[in-house]
Amino acid sequence: MPLKFRCDRNSFLNTVTNANRAVAKQSPLLAALSGLYFELNGDTLAVTGSDLDLTITVMTEVAGQESGEAVIPARLLLDVIRVLPVGSLEVTVNHEEAQISTNSAEFAIKVLPTHDWPNLPLIDTNSLQNMGDGSLLETQGPEFSENDSDDPKESNKEQSEKQQSEQPSSAEYSVTTDVSAFRDALSQVVRSASTDDTRPILTGILMSSEGDGLRLVSTDSYRLSLRDLPGATLLGEEQQVLVPGRALNELQRMIQSTDKMTLRLSPKIAEFELDKIRLTTRLIEGDFPNYRTLIPQVAEKDESAGEETDKKDNILTVQRSRLLEAVRRVRLLAQDSTPVIIFASEDNLEVRADTESIGSASETIEAQYNGEEISIGFNPAYLIDGLEVSGAEEVTLQLQDSLKPALLSPVDDDGFLYLLMPVRIPSG
Image (cartoon, rainbow, N blue to C red):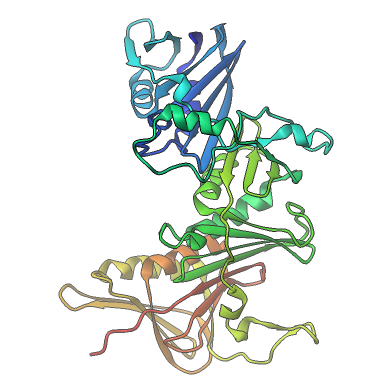
């Protein structure tokens, strides 16, 4: 169906850029997913990108002239908008092409068939009308089946017909909440989620109700991040979900300029709604690793006494920025998978690296240390990540020995823990 509107170039670029983050990089069975779905109703334009696991819809106001829908190739459209000058532009779409024009330039892009655009796995917000939480957006249609055929011979038309038999997911939970604390928590845990799709459980971030608050946990098996948010009411009592790290990473980008967020959950889908953006993601099925057994006992609290244990061995306290800067500098000589080595002794900390074929570097900084002398190696990138997200003036590094996990945590903030596996130090 044709559509036509005028808009500001910068606003349009921002809308298309955000929706494009969910566009499928490769989709041989559904070519339409390489495009963005445009739906114009009056002066409200909704732009949607999806790879069926992650869906992002961005709403924006335009000067609508003819309502309709279209699917436009995402990458080419984004490239075109980027090179256009600042100012007003006009978008006109017919059954064959989308014309993007300014006062001095005009581009024509062949469009994709709208009937090939799949009905996406969205939450049926009609089931939320009695919950009284958040503004409601209409679902785009039935959920795309997880059991659809992988046979490349199956046509898009057959897939579309199969989708129509699916029913939209019903929401079981909805809450609207302030996002300031959640925003900061995401920045501390998203880096530790794995990006290895062969281990899908580790690509997720566990969100669970913990005591009177919320806990976020992520791990890629080499490091683990844990953040507690006391008093946070994002989930119900004893509720937990495993949300793809990719989805929460994109959400983190989008909540930087907003104060409120609505979360909706169905058995298989999570939906985050911001002011003008709706992000929908499939939840990961399976059991998250028992992370509690990984945390060194030195960091545990005696629940019966409500106090920390008396064990204070091998605890290093150091100014975070000084250690971070030292690791960044020494890292230049830690190449070819060479670790950065921390050598801790009484009131002394040395950071060093030695790559035999290149050279070596070391730096000594002031620190407080209680324990036996110890040398322990770390992946420098992982150590830097932990220091960057700790966000405190001082941090403690609790060391067991050179082969057991170390625990990094901010001083005077027991809500964040960063567990880091050591790297074996080369002999000789």
